[in-house]
Amino acid sequence: MTAALITATFIGLAGLGYSAVLGFTGGDLYLHTSLGIFSTLVTLLAHSMTMFYLLGKGRAVREAVTEGQLSPDLYAAVARARRPVFSIAVIAMALTMAAAILGGGVDTRTIPVTVHSVLALSAIAANIAALRTEVIAMVSSTTIVAEVDRLLDPQ
Image (cartoon, rainbow, N blue to C red; front, side, top):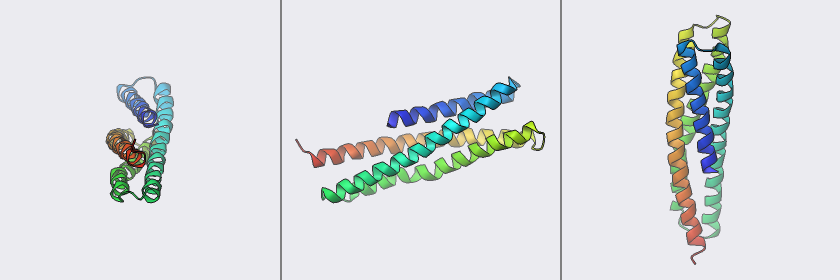
């Protein structure tokens, strides 16, 4: 699941990047718009699913720690690993949605192109930061889950 979430986030980010290149170079407007909307949806889905996945992993570790009478430090470590994901992912999602929505305003000439461009670049930067943070959190969570499994079943 971790690989699928990282891949989905990367695909969404790559699509946003290519859409931005099309926008800045004056490429095909239809492709820029279509790819931007599609990539926005993929990116939002990937970040949302990642947050739910990390919540689920945290709950599973908390239950395993309680039932197996393990150290509560294991749950605290998962909580620490996932905490930064929620703030940066929400920021990335908000910037991505704002860029996509205001892109429609550029098309109708009610929003300046500069506003859309700055939001698009900010969204891409925030999504890169979110991807990095999500990878670190998922790797840490996976390591902790493996440790909990090992402690519960020491064969």
